[in-house]
Length: 308
Image 1 (cartoon, one colour):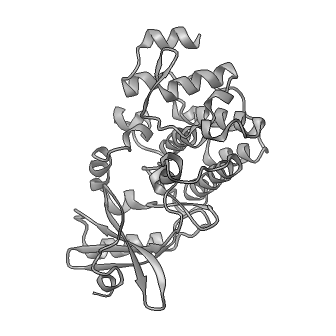
Image 2: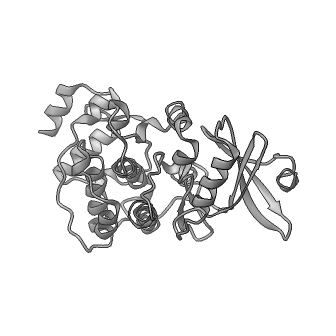
Image 3: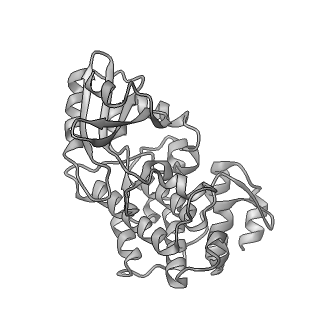
């Protein structure tokens, strides 16, 4: 009842995804929160409480903080800190949002990488996000990125895969192993990060059809241009070329290493952090050959001719 009152009867919706709806709320003391109302959760109350308490102990500057939860009967609600600048998705792709400068984009990419590295390499047990995309990166008042929905895969169990495959916009970020049926590891998050990094650089959706030469799928075009050393054409046109050339090339190379076909060829997220910080050099990556097969949007012969 308290959360129902705090959200004014769940009247102010902030967003909706495959796992439920998110509403804005105000708790006593005027603390603004985001309340996620989970749907179709088959988990028992005891297991739900156990999993949520584990998630609540995970804290990092680049992770959205879980403040509390509610489990009454069939109702399952999660209470998170409210991030005033909304999702990265709304800033990258909205015509009405102020454009993100290159420096801000690079800092956001760095922050996301640090958050994922913490989940993968610094938690007691490796936590795989499984649904990394711009919708699941929220920005605070200073545009510090915070990863949302981490721990949902464990919380939802088998229901997670079903929700994931029916969510519009998610498929383009999924690693090939999701489709092939191979076991999912933290390297699936690395792949998703790489696809998202291409969008941060370009301001273009990976799923959009484009007309750049004979290419119709942006990640293939981007991978070929990175391989050729021509990365300035990948920069968001709204930036008018205002970007650090060295950082741009580095970010483009990192993105393409992250989306390599074989998991072993993708870096760890801790390595990605070091690459972005300039601690580690980034070599020119090969063009991932599974892109066109996985997405089914481009002819094999066309890509081979363009990239070789």
